[in-house]
Length: 182
Image 1 (cartoon, one colour):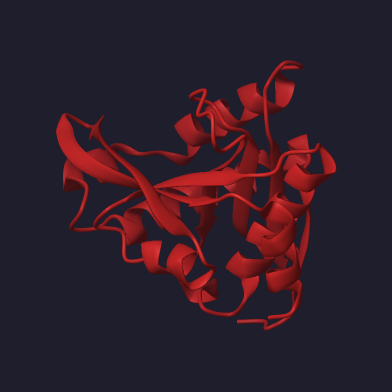
Image 2: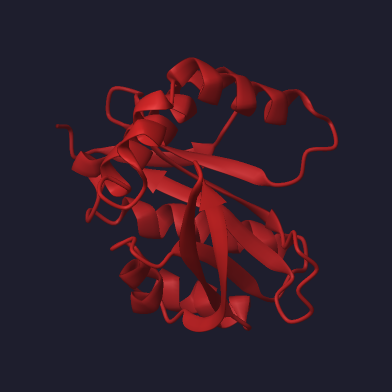
């Protein structure tokens, strides 16, 4: 595996790579958490169709950044924008961040996160919220970045009821400085 990687803003030509990361990372991250038949039913084609519609929709909200390895293969992505539920305290949201298993714990996720934070600040947002499955071991990534547990709710995925927790940051400018210094 090449240790060189770069982060850049995603373009519509990236949908196949994003879809592959989406499906593969769900299958590894949520194995034993989400029902196996739901994960097995995921497909690159269905995921690609959803991402294509996001990129084609002129009113789609959010921005996507991708991480590429030294060969130009997409190995991760982050997707964020305005907070979607009307939360009064947090105006920005990280909708999703996923990395292929072999690229985790290399600083790539932190750099993807940093790009979303920088974008949110550029459009004058001050807070950030991210929802994560309680049983997802990656939730500690957000805690390591100073995220505070601020909300909880349940969600249904594939007929299964799962618990979500939201991590929040009220001062994105302070978070950006923290990320720059790590």
